Length: 187
Image (cartoon, rainbow, N blue to C red; front, side, top):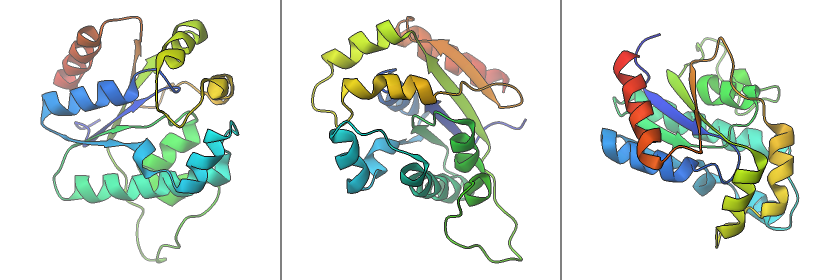
C-alpha cells in the first residue's frame, strides 16, 4: 500500500485516541480532527443519557468524516483522525464513504467513481479494567463510563486485509507515538 494520506486512531472510549491523535498530528505536522467534535447534538444528548448510538446515528456522522478526510487528502493535506470506528463497516465508510455503508448517505452521481482515502488504522487496545479505570478519572466528557461495555460489545478489532497496527494502551504515550512513527517510516 502507498503511504497513507490519513491515520485513523481508533479504539473504545477512554483508550487515548484524542491524546495520541493530537500528539501524533503535532509531531508529524499533519491536521488533526477529533471525530467527537462532529457528532450532531442529538448523538451527544443520547450518549449523555446513557443510550448507546446505533448505526442510524453513526452512519451520517461517519459519512461526514469521510468527506472531510477526502477533501483534505485530495488537497494534499495529511490528516490524523481520532474516532472510535468500532466496526469494520464504520472504518470502510471512513475509507470509501457511502459505498462502504449499508445505509446510503447523500446520493452520488451515477457516473462518479467512489473516492477512497488511503488510511492506516492505529488500533489502541486495552483490557476493560484498564480502560474503565481511565474513564472513571475523565471529567467533562459526554460519553459516560456506563457505556463502555456497549463499546466493547460492538468492537470488531481490525484484521487482515485492513491496513492497521495494534498498540496496547499499557505502553507510555511516548512509546505509542514512537511505534506509530516507526511504522510510518516503513509504510
